[in-house]
Length: 74
Image 1 (cartoon, rainbow, N blue to C red):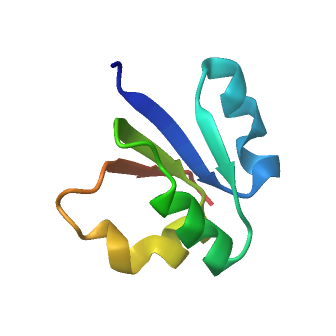
Image 2 (cartoon, rainbow, N blue to C red):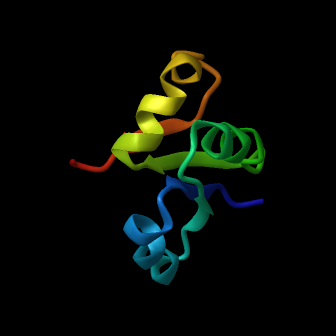
């Protein structure tokens, strides 16, 4: 199974990534963002985060088993 690239955050900032085949998990509250993180497919290799989602996920991003993350510029 090929590895997946996903994006988590505000849909308006991430919608264009769908054109490149990125799986977009929209969320604007801390709860929605955390729910999206736990819903990531097991084969997710890279997660693109908005600055808002990166702040919400800060406690879980330190886990070395987490996928690699990239934060969009503010």
